[in-house]
Image (cartoon, rainbow, N blue to C red; front, side, top):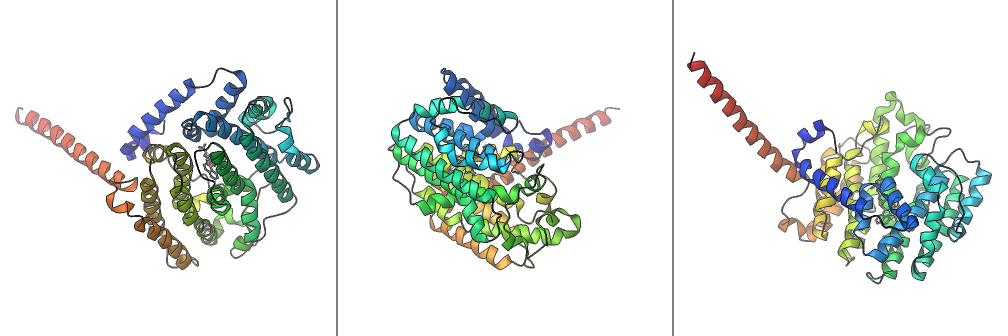
Length: 413
Ligand code: IN0
């Protein structure tokens, strides 16, 4: 549930963590009885944890389509990620993946742990896919085809320029945005969002993952995976792996801050996309990962630990985001708070300080102009202060009681 130390430091996490635990228990009980659907939903819970809970709240028909889309993409990703598959085997699989999903018994063994199970028993995913409606089939097939081709292109090519970086992120995440917008539209619950906004939603998430996962990707065995664009890192070091060496900490953090500043470009499009959603469950499904992303960027910015281990939002904060994100006002509040946190970490001597601050200020302006900030109660960072003062008062009362008790005992001797 989260370590005791973290809970004592952040007592505000206790209630959301308990609620999260209960929601997870409830979701586990809702697994459908048909074996192929049971496989898909239990797989979803195993590979995406908290995100699965948000998918679970979607309208049934759309939920099934999103669950299958998610698993198809995870499977495609497992093939792309498995550095032990030779290129001449991997490329044809990626290119033909959109056809494999129509095949009742296609499977290809690769990946590890849960992903290996997903790949070995992929026939369950195909069987469930075949039961979806035509509109969903078209959207999933089209995106899988374009993503597989894009991934194949980048197996043979490195991410050199910032344009390459945007193109790679488009294939692996921007297209997910386009696909989801098509699924929402096919469900009849939303208008079709403009492709450029859907793309930005994916880019913001994927760039955050690429920044956060630097060390994991560079240390990948048998071969490093490199997604940071040379156009950015070559300003600071000669080789991407040099960023993890302790002697290069100052340059490494400047490079990291440059990467975060690049990701911030997408904030405004994300706010626009979210503000145009109508269905409350779709809204939550889309908003929660975006808030997690800006929260993660705020943790990573100016933080040398990105090059030493894993920098993540604590579980309690994730639980808070899951339970407190209901309306667009909550999103403006969270984006505003995390932008404040980021702004307070910007050092004027950083080479990109002016650019970073202007991007953050632009996002804060949108949040302010929405009018949501004045009427909101309090969110994440402010809450913490409120609960901490309650805790200090409680501690003070407890100490006074102990003191009074000890004084009374002493006078009786
Ligand atoms: C996602 C996205 C996602 C959700 C909602 C709207 C989106 C719009 C555009 C693009 C992507 C959108 O969200 C998930 C979130 C997730 O999986 N979180 C993990 C945590 C983690 O760190 O991995 C969890 O365990 O909760 C996401 O990251 N991706 C994703 C994949 C498929 C679908 Cl259908 C939706 C992956 C990625 C690469 C960012 C697109």
